[in-house]
Amino acid sequence: MIISLDDELDAILANGKEKAAEDIMRALESTYGEVPYVFSFMKDNPDILITKVLYNNSILRSTTLDDKTIELISIAVSAAMRCSHCLKLHIRLATNLGVPDDQIAAAVFLAGNLVNASVLATASRQLDEEREVCRICEIGSKACEIQGVSRD
Image (cartoon, rainbow, N blue to C red; front, side, top):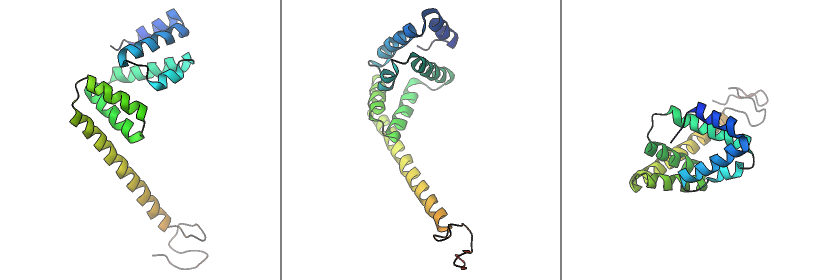
């Protein structure tokens, strides 16, 4: 359950940031069945932990996407970024929400396809740009100033 920003801020101000950070850690464990690694890493820095959770909750409050769709997106992004911690967590959450294995696999395959396309597009674009640059003078023009030849 996502509460309003006003309620979140009121609780932080009323209880102080250390208590708010403890409450956040308990809420994360209750929600996910564990405390995701990134939040565990932040637990000793309440300022960062609280602002990260406020930011996350603001995004969740502003979306009309359902929980299953959010988890499928999270799986795809985690797979594309090769974050095994995130991928395991989001696969488990999606499974708990009743997302079938074939939809989880589709999210992973789509992520892989996009990563593949990104690698190819980036490398081919760079190769095309390098073809336009003289290896000697490193100037990107049709005629090399040093060699005095056209590179058409």
